[in-house]
Image (cartoon, rainbow, N blue to C red; front, side, top):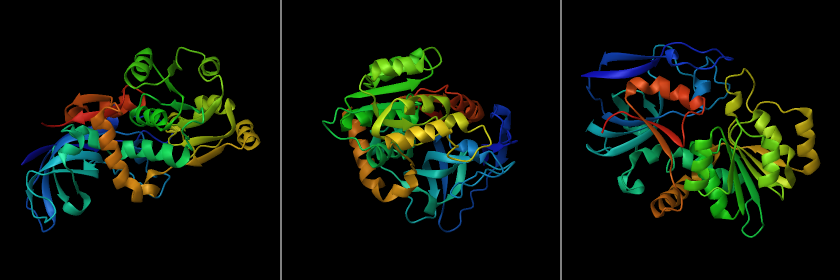
Length: 347
């Protein structure tokens, strides 16, 4: 059968911004001659995520994520349907998901890397399995719960950077649900600011491209900042940390502003920020959701319930067609998405 796939065409370099030309669309022939334990899947939708930037380098810099290889299929989060199966755990017609889904219209995969899912978990919105009711939602929920120290009735203020992205948009809503009296988002456009306040219930939002962030933070956080969900790093995070209260908490989730630079992860902080953390006894610990997968099942059930009940609203930016994977990835890295960036491959 003829399939389309996206391969890594070139690397941007450790200090280079990715461009669509780093990816290449190919037509190839797939022979679905299944071995025991294998299934043929048809791809429904794929995900692009900031962590993938390190996979474009020869060395990812971390031991838990492998680099993509040149001229081979790119992979990441995906959802699809089983077309045929020689695996006892995967039935034909079933919906499955994986963190290692190749960017192909059809693929032969080992059943052992696929997870069966019930579409009712997301009321049929299968793309949510890649976002709000998937790894992204787990990162947001568990990040807030494990590192945020949010306490009902404690008059806490949370700030979220990258707040209109897939993870930040969910994290801010959980900050509000778990008890923060103020949740302030930082993002890159007026449209995103409106979405955070009007659609997601944030107390306020700051457009860092147009507004003076230190001044606006003081206006929106009159009692200081108690919890900071950090998705971006860099100058914005330095500004937030400077206004944090004593004994407050940084949830170190991502540093997207630094991903196109050849720096270690997490990137080093200035002496001034180190001193602020020390003097104010601010915790700043790297959060890795993979360390909390023993809590994933319960957390996914909660995410499902919150989304279906409307307590958590989901924002998505959907692009159609596997031929647009490279464009969608590069747009996401520049903040072109509101909510989760999804590429729809088939119905």
